[in-house]
Length: 334
Image (tube, helix red, strand yellow):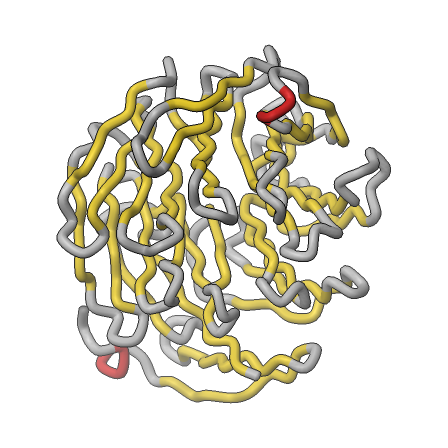
């Protein structure tokens, strides 16, 4: 990677944010860029994940590759090839030794995070694998697919555990509850539902929005489940997306936030429960105070839609993947 100092003139300042300090930099020659580190790929990036230590970040995208970078140096350490089409989502296993990836080619693949070698290819879905999530205990992985089903997998022996066929739109977002007993999922018809695999095939709808669900997150304390959604039938990208915040035990929204011109496409909670981040088709990241669900800051730098975002385990970094072909790291310190 070329040194950033050779590309742009940087000025640093400090933004006070709800007891959190976000270090941001302004790129004079190329417009405002608040990123602490810019990681470049060969194509647009769709899914992003930190390893448990926060030392590495992985992403998958349009180039069908799973890329891994060292957070501190920005050096790319792995480029994993095997998928035959774009990679929609990636997650690290709980011990950080493996990466799981879901792709348009319909497969779920596990990779050795250190050596970059493929460990296993799992074929269970009949269409593209859109979304992944791993349980808090690390034992179970859930996949959501365009074939309108969810499947759970054992991360040790790679066997299939359970399957749900809601019979509605394709599954575009998934997340585990903090206790690992329930799985939240959203579909392209705007349904927000919860499934407890131990209870069998039953699920219940806890929300319904008139937009496509593009992202979903559950807060670590179990108080909130939130979705990011894209506006339907908006060919000119003038509508704003909806960020819906729900208590998991009710269908009544606690907050509905209109954010991101062209739609909201990414969402995540910090692990300490104080911040929520959303990203959108406008390329902007918004930070929200979870206590009040009011906007607390904006991060600029991406030149394309933000597809995914995630906080590191210790909340010191925020990573975002974008269609502009980069993963950007934003440093958050107390």
